[in-house]
Length: 246
Ligand SMILES: NC(=O)c1ccc[n+]([C@@H]2O[C@H](COP(=O)([O-])OP(=O)(O)OC[C@H]3O[C@@H](n4cnc5c(N)ncnc54)[C@H](O)[C@@H]3O)[C@@H](O)[C@H]2O)c1
Image (cartoon, rainbow, N blue to C red):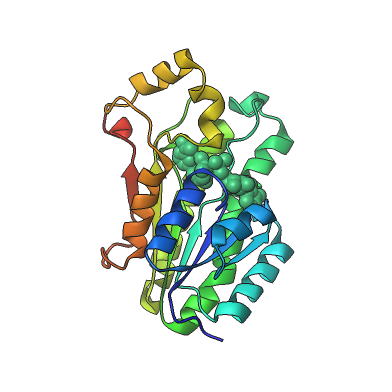
């Protein structure tokens, strides 16, 4: 069966930027397929016409099974939003004290995850003659975040992966772009932003004087997914309140 509406796969769609992206893309008319560690949450985020499943994006077999179900259910994947990501535990700080297991865990979600999902989605897009891979990287992929070596390295890798996909699949009608948020208020950043002094310290670093709300990042995904900006591929759309302009 082929869905009449365009289909977007969103990873990590249960919380924060992913959840806001699901709300925006559903309002834009997309049918949603959501993969998240939280399967019940994924079902809720996908809505009654969508497909939500509990999937660890770093698990190759689980990712393959999920995309096979998406294709069997909807017959198409127009947009893949590689959003699931983690910052790492409080031990994942500067490089030599980051535990090896924590380094590997951050890379499993932030790099292996987008790789496995794109690997599963690209053949479907090639067969359809087009598609769009949108990767939620971070400004940490462009400038280093102090004391966040694994996260910074992983986001640099995710950004370069987005560029590789852009140049390697352009002839097949597939575009690939990254969104690079600055600091957004989500579960990932809540522990810091809930403490007034730490929040003020973060806000002082941002020229607009405040952190982003998740729907402000989802706006960028929505514009990319809309097929406007159709000549844009291999780009990093920075949405950071001026953080990296300084
Ligand atoms: N919040 C920020 O300030 C910020 C800034 C720049 C980039 N980002 C990026 O945006 C993306 C979303 O972050 P967020 O802030 O909304 O985080 P969040 O913690 O609010 O949400 C992350 C979601 O991903 C899911 N997830 C985590 N590991 C997963 C896995 N292995 N498999 C499947 N799902 C998994 C979680 O269950 C959760 O629903 C991440 O890639 C993050 O690195 C966030």
